[in-house]
Length: 146
Image (tube, rainbow, N blue to C red; front, top):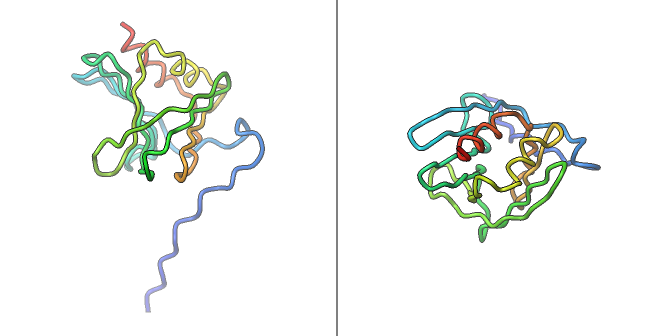
């Protein structure tokens, strides 16, 4: 008789200061393409948990996280130097992603890239994303500033 398939583990219950929480497993990948550039964060071989896209034609940076929420709940981004709550919109793809746009000069982009070790994205009822602050974030924003 086959053994039952166990449910995936529940996301960790974070406690205390978010700056002490462990970053999620995964890597950043940077690519250039006809639209500009994109940085994707996640586990290799799986759908990205977070993407940051420079769209040079639109002169915008689009940030999207995997998942869907009822009534498009706003996302709160916390870095070591600032926090901001931003309205999101579904991207309409499969798998589902929620996205928002920033101007290339928005200080939140630098805050994410220079955050001390990590930044987080909170968007109920989705799990909190604890994302490592790697140079790929700044590479994408710099691509759109040129």
